Picture 1 (cartoon, chains in turn red, blue):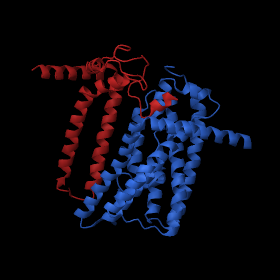
Picture 2 (cartoon, chains in turn orange, yellow; picture 1 turned 90 degrees about the vertical axis):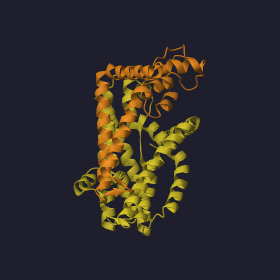
Picture 3 (cartoon, chains in turn blue, yellow; picture 1 turned 180 degrees about the vertical axis):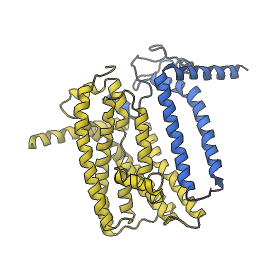
Picture 4 (cartoon, helix red, strand yellow; picture 1 turned 30 degrees about the vertical axis):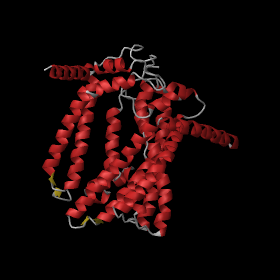
Amino acid sequence: VRAARIAFLSLRLGLLNAFQYRTDFWIAMLQSLVALGTSLAGIAIVFGQTDTLAGWSQEELIALVGVFMVVAGLLGLVIRPSLERLMEGRPPGHARLRPDEAGRCAADGQRPPGRCVAGDRHRPRRRPHRIRDAQAR
Amino acid sequence: VRGGGRRLLSVYQAKFRAEIALQFAYRGSLLIWLLGLVLGPVIYLVVWTTVAETRGGSVGGFTSGDFAGYFVVLMVVNQLTFTWHFHEFEWRIRNGFFSPLLLRPIHPIHADLVENLTFKLLTFVVVAPVALVLAVVFDARIAPAPWQAAAFVPALAFAFVLRFVLEWTVGCVAFWVTRMAALTNAWWVLVLFLSGQVAPLELLPVPIQVLATVLPFRWMVSFPVELALGRVDPRGAALGFVAQAVWIALAFLGLRVGWRHGVRRYGAVGA
């Protein structure tokens, strides 16, 4: 019961975070639609040439993509934000002082700068790949 | 001019040294990106060889060996031509990280070029043997005529220049719009389908083939792959080089205009 309550709370926090910035929410929605369209187009191209793929029909693969997106969406809503906060809270080159506390803070969806990690250097959210390198320069 | 060239060369040498040190500092990240570069083509390779076997050995003129050859070469060409810098533009502008870059007496594109080449230099050491192993395991058929093999090299170089300059130009759109994520995603999808990364363009519907040929996408990835596999005749190769030259010229023009006007709009949000 306690685990279910924590999971529900995490889900609720995730939803509130997602709705916090409306533009971000709609952009994320658009990106999800693009990802869905990409997967469906890929399947359509493959099944334009064959009726089955190693025993899988087109409908079964579309269902698989749907299940994958639901699971990935739930993970993105409940777990990923906390992991991102944990990563953002530990800039490269800065030793983590109290790993247990940092982990707890991140899991709670909070990152008090200077408390969980050494240093308070700000890193932007959802930094694209390899930005860190540019920053290091 | 000679002095300027020497200065640029020394800047490139210094940047290369710094970049190599940086890349080695983040070995884990390097490995993860490498995995992504290899996994994509391998998945499509397995899917299409399975389709060919299901259809009795070939699909649209491609046998299992042809598909293996296609996706192995594609993996190498994609590794050598792909860029990521346009994904960073939004972040650079919103957080003001263009400010120090603009203060330097050298165009920021040079730093990105060095970063790109260094990453490729280091990852190619792994991608090349992986490609060789895949070619052997999947019995890849790669049989270009000597002229096609020779033409592959400049086609690959032009493909890289085209993709790099064009995607850097696309990145300049971030000077006008605040959020680029949707646009960069849409661009990524276009490149994925129209440059032949999901399937050889010959297997796609005719309107998509026409679109890929008229737009720059085929010339960024698919054209060198087709040459390496010996699937282009001399007339097609000549047409391909002309198309690459035209699109490179247009990309440089777009970059010049986009950069000049974009920098004037730059407000260093968040700096």
